[in-house]
Image (cartoon, rainbow, N blue to C red; front, top):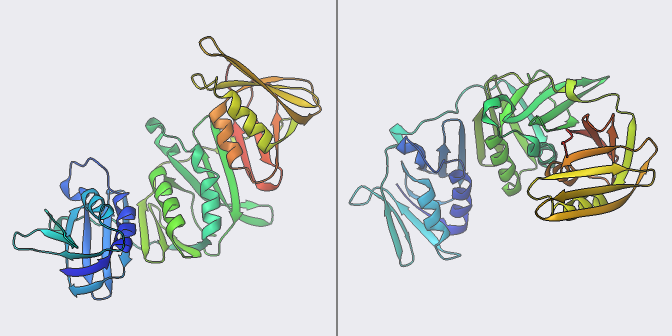
Length: 372
């Protein structure tokens, strides 16, 4: 195997594939990236046995062949080479190693044969549809912050995606919750997704797909599904992942439908006020919101640090109430609101609050109160 490639193209590809590779592996080959020189390009593949990425990049192939080499080390080497450099990669050299040469720099890395490299892709995925890149980025951004990191409830460690009938309209609904907050957004149901079952896409896969969306020039992303796998195809990048094998809870039961006390407030003033008082609330993360007819007051206090208070103009026509929140959870939601105002509805100070973006009815957020 021998090829030459521009350093910038190689670095971009390696940044994608090494991101899949775990830092610590009990199986040595999982620390490696599979490199295959073909007549029409170079294929780079990495996997952690749950997720697999393949990317094909243009290069000048001198001799075809394949091997695997340490992914993170290869990425670090290329990252430190000079901008604009040409890189020549050869395997095997006289010692049976992979050689990376550029200018006056030369490196030799140990390899593992491709016959030991596992493959998780290749299955038939019967459900196929495509989504506009910006639409996919949007539904991911507005839900992924609420994905749980608690391993004991593994079925919450991803976003739940399913087709849903909303009256006469069919929508694609994307949901995430960690038990403290819930994000639920809708998108027009893509053609071909009508028969999809509900699937839970793992947190890591969601994060990797989101990073790739920023780097791809593809306007539409091809998505394929089976009962246990999902595949994203964008230009020359294919990301395949196992799905979480579990039953997602009935999230609709935790969305209040009878919260009758409604507060309307500007997103930016509210977020800025919460951010300022959070300086004092950094340890406890607890803030208290107190409603009044024309404003809300946000307060927090700490025995060690002191106290903070902010007043924000708002519309509110019900009896006053006090409710505590984790300021970080509230800010996470406000960050994803597109419009200028939000409506927050309450039942009382100890029940979940529902947050609506006044400019976008396709998104709804639920925030559990915090005892302050």
